Length: 526
Image (cartoon, rainbow, N blue to C red):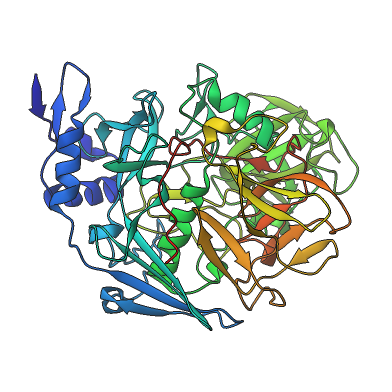
């Protein structure tokens, strides 16, 4: 029997920041109806809730196609200032919360076998859980309509939550069977492994690392043929939302992410059967509580974190507290008892998921510009200190330079090859040599954010690095985005690492669960 399910007072005792946000959003829209027989909200009532809050207005931003970094807000968007990021210690301000196309809800749910999303719980309703007990955690967004206009010296991006003349439905708004998705679910967290050994999007778990584009395909398909690794549409959504809200190409001017978190000190005091490690007090600022470390038996300075002896004592243990004891800093970890020796190396490591749980809007745990912590945009947690593999984008050079290929559907993706029906959507930027290149701007082609132009830098153009092999090298390469904990200024939302073969896996490679990769929408380009 269908019924409307409303949050109880007991629900509100935890996570007041984001639960209050969800309650506010629910209050401003029709309440969805929960069907006890199917154990989920009815699709029609979820769609009606979203539709009731649509404003039908158009929000735009314009950027130079040259080196200029800052953009100009257009249309309805010109009324809104850029958000002030939240931290746990200081309230921010996000004027876009609850506004038309910028609305989002934190939910539990799933995609069915034909790629249709369903919602089983909404943050604040008494059923929602982040720990996996009620399934995956997603950010639900309205299905948007988009328009991108490239001129001689500018490029504009426009969105609306309603069908508007000159706009097309976002590329993942239609399944590859051309069925309209009434809303989109996007993984809140990077890819983790749940208690059943399946790919998941849940909180308080170590991110799944040592993976490649090929292994992501195999891993996510075990969950269901409808799932994939991070899709280009997931990547596009974050970039478009960031651009519209902040009107700058330089994402690290707002959110640095965990991209300057490089320390690898030696243990200064041995420990036996304890859940602590002790390093020099001079490094105390390098260890945010909540961040992760690996400890290895290696005693050589600056070891490769991917080597087994760099993490054979413990890997990806969270710091739950830290204290100063004379010349030493004692880190208490959430692991079982370990035994360490003086000289063993403690290394920074990608964060667990859930670091931003409870923030009431875009933000970071303590400082979005610290370079040591993740951040959240539109409820989506990013920048954990590892690259995120985009499954349905790859690079190929047959002798004419590095081309960007986009799969028509993740259903076509197979390990070891780029699908035969994949389409070329652009080229990797820069000259013919190997190294970091810097594009002037990016544009949207079939849902792929394609870098255009060259000659920029870490402070001009898109401000993020794109690493490519020399044009004399041939083969296929995987697409890694955002950057890892040692990328510094090369990292950012537009960062791309494009020099690893499709099976290349390493400690700094992760991804994200997706259910929208089997899509057939139109390009946003006008």
